[in-house]
Length: 86
Image 1 (cartoon, rainbow, N blue to C red):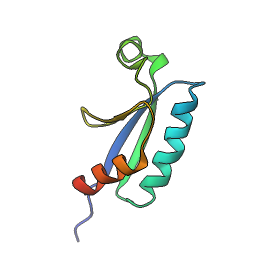
Image 2 (image 1 turned 180 degrees about the horizontal axis):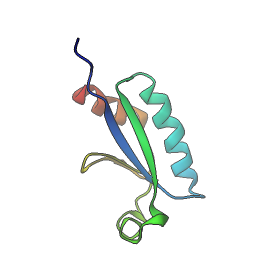
Image 3 (image 1 turned 90 degrees about the vertical axis):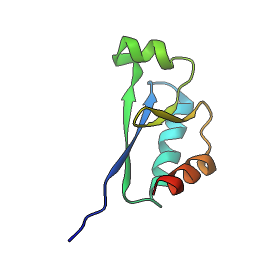
């Protein structure tokens, strides 16, 4: 029996960021349509290098090393990317 590959997105965020909170909710909503996908949320404040890299771009959604979204989260853009990769 073959199992589907489980795929993960990464959401870079920080506490108190309302755009980040909104992105997490919307990401969860969109991923309901793609059960083989999940996301992990990483607080950039816990890593100086991530903080320097993403401070002015958060929320950032990445798959592997590719940025799929940053700043204002767009569900249609993410949905299209997921369809391409699924």
